[in-house]
Image 1 (tube, helix red, strand yellow):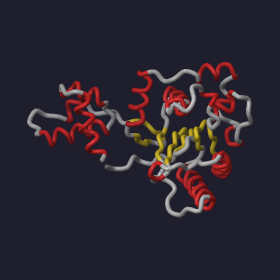
Image 2 (image 1 turned 90 degrees about the horizontal axis):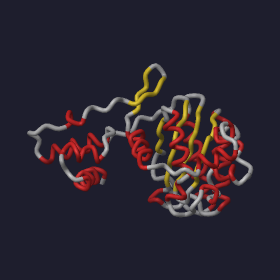
Image 3 (image 1 turned 180 degrees about the vertical axis):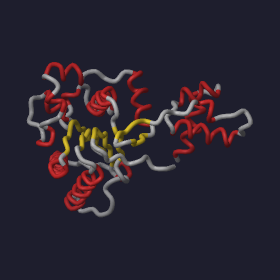
Image 4 (image 1 turned 45 degrees about the horizontal axis):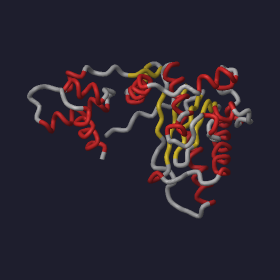
Length: 256
């Protein structure tokens, strides 16, 4: 399967990276502190702002705003420098990260605000805590608990656009089912660049992927293509008069 196109142009980016084989990348509290110092140094060098973050045990989420076309350089510095630190401290060698980082360019304000709540609710979704403020390693939690924030977060919209009460109300709202579906669609859409602007390519109609003469093998390839290009499993199942589970099984086979 082709890689998602890398979007480096200025704007908001949701960044995710995981430890190789889903192994822990943060073992002690100091590790998270060092990681944030590395992020802030990279942001200072490349003139970026860290608007939000969540540092889980085996992966991280960053909401970065770059102001120059340099996201790949910024992320290379973060991941390489932290891997050097981690391998030296824990006497290990080899790759720390599962691969290149994943990134999604954020094209609308609604998408942006959904991503913030998604990032902040990661520890809650993992059943590690029950409220945002209880998990120490998100920016929202630091702000709500009145603690100092990293230097690269001082221009974060969480600080500049909200007072404490409004921020608490905003972050305490989990994504509802409709918002989760919208977020999944936004993340699957194929971004295009035209005249320096990023937009999402309109999806082809579902009926264009299928025809009655298809055998099962061709139909299954078409199912995966439609899903990869942004159609939901539920909409594909409804169109083909299949169960959601049957479509899910087809998609999983292509992911292996």
